[in-house]
Length: 410
Image (tube, rainbow, N blue to C red; front, side):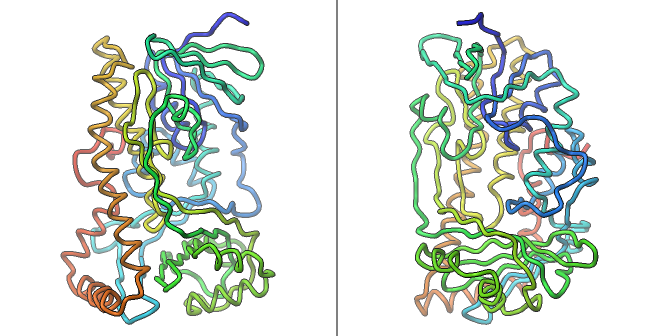
């Protein structure tokens, strides 16, 4: 076995959250390694001809983070789409809420960005840093009684790290290797995602209808050559999802436009569909000795409000702040007292969001007449109270509470 390369921080998982953390730490004197079995070189020179199926709704806080990491201009140069309005309504009743960015003196409530665009922008900026990039499926060796963790790469190279960060997603191998237990709730729904071309322009609006089968969202994407596009997120019970996935494209478009009440006219074209089960997971602890969890490795959430990535980026901002503070004080960056502070700052907020989404999911999937009446009445009531709507929008911007420096505007 080759001589080990030693790093202060080894981040396993080169997705958006892992790459953001590596970039955020790269300005310090810490030695950082980023590992992923996918390619870690940026293909950022121009966006792909077709939209990728996975997109994220970025809050103002997340955009501030990307501004501070100098990657937001790269995203703007590729493809992003602001959503200035939100239209939410109950397909089984008459309740509806309309939100407008002007209410809080903002140009946009948020931005819809393809995940590939975000990741490419981060990797392009990482190329200018001293972060060591490894494209490999790692094997991690643990001894919880030692202060070093060892990572063996597929080519035989060995990395030693003071702190290992699990940014390897919902099925995190690192979380399992560290014996960190997580709770799990099956939503009993599957999610179909795709990109569609619509007859009418989306008017920079994020649309969401609550059907008796589950929520259906149309998220705005940039128009290309006067053609209008949206990213679709459709939540269905498994049997229905299987039936919808089996449809030919023409029939799928017809079913989709019917479910969406033709709010954007006809669905002209659809890209290939992807379907996956929806589950809520939450780690009981965010760290164990020298291992710490961020993003989906720590928590996964219903895509109802599009908050999954934003929660992960907030994890990144807080963990960065704690690591850099410890480093400035010449403290142990992997010490339990450091990682416990990160957990205290993030777990409560994440728990609140997970519970809120579980509650919303139950409220909008219930078919009981009393619940449906309360749901419709509640939507109408909120829509008639401007102050309450303003509070909801400010919460959606992600800029309330005690924020880490990385997500503040500078």
